[in-house]
Length: 263
Ligand SMILES: [Zn+2]
Image (cartoon, rainbow, N blue to C red):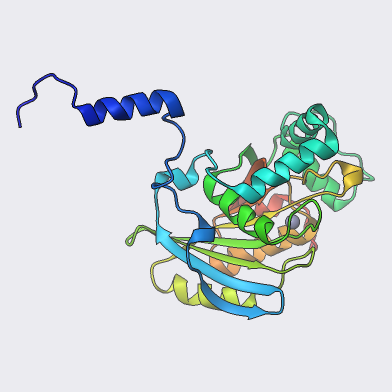
């Protein structure tokens, strides 16, 4: 059809809608919310849940617009009430910085050394939480609100480039520590033989009230050991730790730089 130079009414309507609502916001019909998607449940034992979702890979899942993560929003709102707006902002900024210059004291324990390695900017990259990470955290926070019932989950994010699909495994319970995801690792072993790659392992960190709640964006000794295991046996490419505001990305090449239970 020949262009007439006249803006169609539908296009004009879209532009006006954009001006009113903001074009950069994710439109509900484009986004996929894990809570609305039926998972494949591998095992549901008491409060322990092991499952996965599979869906088409889209760029918006890696963007920082976190869409309608209601459980996460409610967590952030509760923190603002508990800490006050300014203290919350300072606590979030403190955990996100990567420009600390002081040396690591010899007396520091392994977990503190790992935290200092990230905060000095030597290892890892801290950035805003992305859509998919927010969705996984939101899923667990909708089961157990983080402030009143703190828990950690395991997320394993696999990509299949020929299918252009994402497969996201999730393991969590009602306990502070996530359950052992043996059934998930067995399933991933099979996936790896069928064109899937274990791109990311994601889990969340939180702190007690005495430490302003905001999770440390660095691996614990146990985390560092687990990342090394996942890299060696499952080809894990990158580890992610989120505190609901920011996420630290750690490339597999950097896993051995951290203190682990083995060194
Ligand atoms: Zn951890």
